[in-house]
Image 1 (cartoon, rainbow, N blue to C red):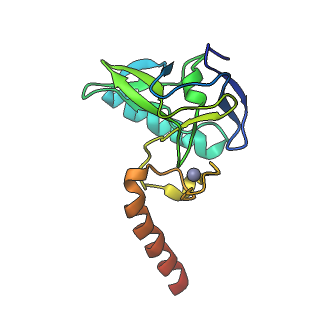
Image 2 (image 1 turned 90 degrees about the vertical axis):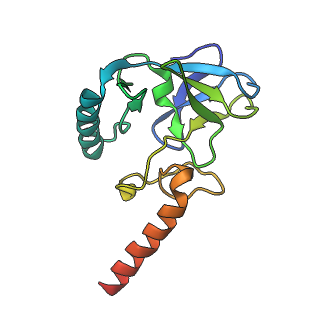
Length: 166
Ligand SMILES: [Zn+2]
């Protein structure tokens, strides 16, 4: 799978990843995140099922994207290049909603050969189920969105204290 900017290759972060096949300047619309538009209710139900499957296998986790107050997007569709991007604690791409279509943009200048990554936006619920192997210098060790890092530090400290107490 590929487009004019990138292609799928095996990744050291996790399974397969998407890599730049040319230099990409910042703020370029690289690829659309494709999917099936579903109701919020259907999106929540599918999200639960995807989470169960992800726990049992090595499949990519939940591919339900929040589209609007009314709609979710289920990214589990064929040839969804954007769904193969890995999460990183120091991502070079960002996800952007433009009139209910989701795009992956370059967040900075990207060199040919770099793996493309974005912040999956996960909160700290079940954080231990999602270890992060992004390799960034400031990797926090779990696939948790940067906006939740302060909460995560507190949670890790609480969990560690619980463990020491036995
Ligand atoms: Zn990381």
